[in-house]
Structure formats: structure tokens, C-alpha cells
Image (cartoon, rainbow, N blue to C red):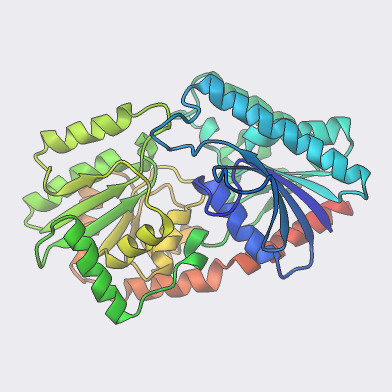
Amino acid sequence: MRIVMISTGSPPDPFGGIGTYIEGLLGGLASHGAEIHLVGASRHRDLPRVYPYRGTTVRRVPVTAPWARTPLPRSRLGMMAAVARLNVVGAWYARRLHARGGVDLVAVHDWMCAPAGLICAVLFRMPVCYHVHSAEIFRGDRGRGWVSALGRALNRALSRRARLVMAPSKGTVSEVPHLAGRADVAVVSHGAGKAWRMDCPDDAERAALRDKVRQLYGLPDGRRLLVYAGRYAPQKGVAELIDAVRLMLDDGADASLVMAGTGWPDDVSFENRLRARVADLELGERVHVIGRYLDTDELREHFAAADACVFPSAYEPFGFVALEAMALGARTVVGPGFDPGVVGSAEGASLRTATTDPAELADALTQVIGDVDPRLGERARGYVLDRHTWDAAASRTLEAYAAAVHR
């Protein structure tokens, strides 16, 4: 098969969940013999415009790193201009490649690339698969404003024109109103994010990493370390997590929390509210809001050093970051927004709370750091290795593509 993918992220080392998905999927596809061409946004301006990556030809569309503290494009208008350029280049590349020898399928990732998918499907009459990675724009807490309205309109339009719609979980399908009950929606679970790039440490290295990370934050011996990594947003449960730490300390637990991430690129107001909440609760020495994303090596070190990793989301499209922590053998607490089938909570691979209530979250974290279930991390790693490999995800994806092409 000859496939063109159009995405807001491209390897190597992309930002964001979609970029992480693309990078992992390309690695899985490398052993399956498909000819893959990717048109994707890239922050690595030193790379050539067209370059090979793990058996894939990548056509890079340069952009500034989306969570940089320097010009992003920071304004929504600038961001939309960058997305428009990506769509034009993606549609043009697919059409040119099709004219030179045929393209079996154009795979479009998320609504920001939907215009390219519509051009390929309607104007160029090419088979299109639309990957719906998230239902966030259909939710009440994120569905307001003209950007979300535009996203919903593009989502519906391409869903009608695409030969195949693909989603990562049944929960995502159920959250998108116009996808429920459709026979042409394939649910294909992803691999475990960047876990393939993170070797699980042995006991000696884990002990060394614990010492290294604790020194970074000046933690005394005996204090438990909690680690959160992800976007600072209300649906991520981060405000409730800070309140939960206060409750844990009031109940006599000795713990500190490191929160890695940032808010939206052009809006740090929620991050500022988190810092204010930390100050109001007198947690300045216990909660570290570091205000940046960790690179892959740093993330591995923090997850390996943690006594518990915690991701208390009220909504999560899939949950790469939790699977990455679990793959490293971390004891992991997740919120109700995670699909139980993704994080294996029913199988005992993670501890999933029923709500984002700080008291419930505090109880779950106290249980985990108290060694009530010392094999939780071992089961977590085993579950991820068994259920979430990128090779298996690539195989299922190609099977769905082939069925759509021959439909």
C-alpha cells in the first residue's frame, strides 16, 4: 500500500499527543512493508524539507514549537495561518504523488488537518481515512468559542466524506455525536506513547535516579515523591491534585508533588491560578509547578524516581503519559477520564478513581505510596507490554486501511 499521512506533528521527538502517536506508529509500520509518506509540522528547522525516517518519507512543514515561551505563533490568528499552510502543503503533496504513480489512501489526523482531507476526498477523489484522536471540542468544558465550533464543523464534514473513520477508544467514539452507531468507524488502540524510547531501569539505576531527582527539588530522605506530567488545564484535574496534596499532608503523609507541563501556548492564566493556589494552601515547599514540559530523558528519570505517578484527568482522549509511566514500572493513579480498557484498571494495572474529588484522590495516592499494593508497578509494566505495542497498533491500522481501500 502507498499511504500519505497528514499530521500536526512529525518526528523526530515531536510535541503533543498526535505527534507522539505518529512517531510510534511509523516505527511499528516500518516492518510491515507499506510505503508511507508523511506531511507534518516540525519544530526542527535544521532538518531538510524532505528526509527519511524509519522507512518513511517525511515532508516537513516548519513551525515554532507550540509550547515555547517565545513566539509560537502566539496569537490564534497566527496559529490558524500555520495550520492552513500545513493543509495546503499536505493536499498538494498527496495530489502530486498520486499523479506520479497512485496513492491508495490519505490518512488525515485530527480536525486541524481536515481541510486537506476534504480537498483530497472531494476535489481529487482519493480515498481518505479520518483519524479522530480526541472528542475534546464536543465537550461542554472545552466546546465553547469559534475555534471549537470550527473544529466541530470540519469534523462532521470530513466524517461524512471519509471512507474510513478511526478512533483510539470506544470512549472517544461515544463522545462524538455523529460517530455513534456508524459501521465505518474502526476502534484501534494506540501503542504506549514514547515508552519505546525509554528503557525500564533496573533496581540499581532506579535507586540512582531516585537520588538524582530528589536532589533537584531538595527532598529530604523518607519523603514520598508524586509526579504529574501533562498540560495544565481544568479537565486534567491538576487543581484538584493540589488540593489533594494539602489533604494528604493534613492527614500526616510526607509527600511532595512535581507538576511538569504548561498551559495553552497563548494563555498562561490557568498556570498562574495553579501557582496562586499553591501559595494560598502554603504548599510552596511541597508542590513544584515547573512550567515546562520535560524532554524524553527527563520524563523517564522522573517517572522512574517517583513513588507514584498521578494523572487525575476528568477527560482523556487516550492517555499516552499514563502508559509511559506504567511501562517504566511506576505505580500509577489515573482519574475517571481514562478509559479502563486503556489503562487496565479492572486488571489491577493502575488505580483509577471514580471522580476527581480531592478527598478520593488523596486516599488513592496515600494507598499507593503506603505500599498497600507493592506489585502495582510490576503489573502496570506487564499490562502495557502485553496490550500496547506499536507493532500491534500498526498491524491493526493497516488491516483497517486495506479493508477501506477495497470497500
